[in-house]
Amino acid sequence: MKRSAKSKKAGSQRDGGITRITVAGYKSIVHEQSVQIRPLTVLAGVNSSGKSSVMQPILLLKQTLEAGYDPGPILLNGPNVKFTSGEQLLSRAGKKISKAAFYVGLELNSDTEMFLFFKRSAKGGFEIEKLTYAKNKEEITLAPGMKYDCEEVFIWLPHPALSAAHIPGVLKKVVEDGTIKLVVARNRCFLSIEGLDIEQGSAPAQIFQPGSNYDLPIRSIIHLPGLRGNPERTYPVTAVGPIFPGTFEKYVASIIMKWQADKSEKIEKLSSDLGKLGLTWKVAARPIDQTQVELQVGRLLHAARGGAHDQVSIADVGFGVSQTLPVLVALHAAEPGQLVYLEQPEIHLHPRAQAAMAEVLADAAKRGVRVVAETHSSLLLLAIQALVAEGKLSPELVKLHWFKRGSDGVTTITSADLDDSGAFGEDWPEDFSDIELQAQSRYLDSVASRKKKTSRAG
Image (cartoon, rainbow, N blue to C red; front, side, top):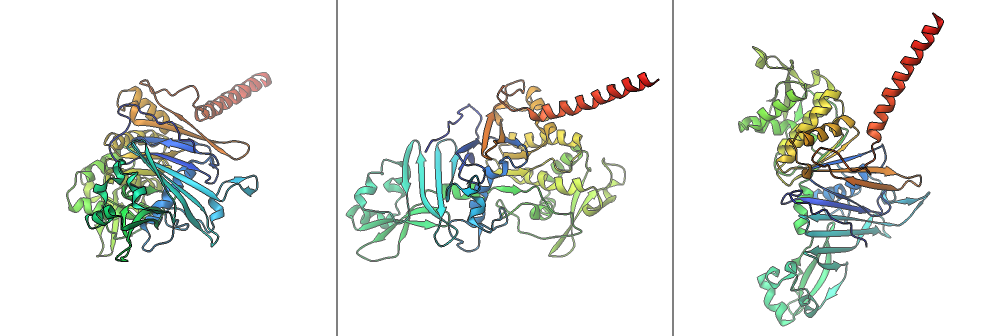
């Protein structure tokens, strides 16, 4: 398996969180493709080019870990990703499924990697084929049913993750005496090493789970899909915490209500961002009862005398407010290192607001949040470049990934860094700009042609 080269640019990574995602065999991503995750990561490309496909495997892991029961290695139909058959997510070569398997790789802090390999099960669904785990260039591979004698395990002891100190004290003595058999077992979408006391016949005790340090970063992902629902008169009260199972939009009203109760400065920052985007000057949550809350926004764009009482339901203002508010709340709710995946943050926004959205994303990135923005907006991308050129955003915080599907339907990804002037490399596909220029040229040529015809007719 070929491992993608990693950028080691100083300052481009923050401590904690997912720093790279690798995918192969999933939908249009037939061959291994890898995207580095920086505090502001942009996924761009035409429709159906594979942008969502590079993120969906990690969302499958998220909804598998969050299920209230053990759904097996992969929960196909959940709140973040919905499939009815395993064949729907596998890569195809022509009209045939190329392989009945896919894999996803995750990197933490540029020094720890885990690759999970899934294959179709004869009983339907998927099963884990194997798991590889590497830390500081030391690698181990686990597969279901593998068994080890203690002597084999001690070969790995120099590896920090498998040192004797990590073995629970109650098992340490019997391991040293050679009376423990170690076996690999599945734990949802991960594999773990469990110890079985041969002499006592006790139940297996987990000794090492490579996925344990990935569990929280995956479950902590804030996912905001492109379809964020219609504005409602009232919203159900939800629990509010650092982890938001499923998709994020259903938590927005309760988060705002909690910020109000806590007198958090995030309320003022949220209102400031709404004003920056030209949507409204204020947002507030009004509890209706113990189960419902109403979202109200200022009717005017800017604060005015008596404006605190001039608020209306979010259902009575432009659609852009209800679609953008979850984006802003997600960015302020996220902690440093937490990954926020935004599908089309610019949706339903005026071009001026699309450009202003770049500053909002940049502010979150500078706080250490890992923002992954999937976008079709050339204005958003250009505004990010402008922030870098103006010295308001370090280019080392930004990573651009361009997705393209060839005539064979296979996705390839081109990645680029910004230099200090906000420019990207020559290899970056610039069809955003090309299309805009072509449209302007077409219009100007048409106007010139019409004037020429009118002049001749006169």
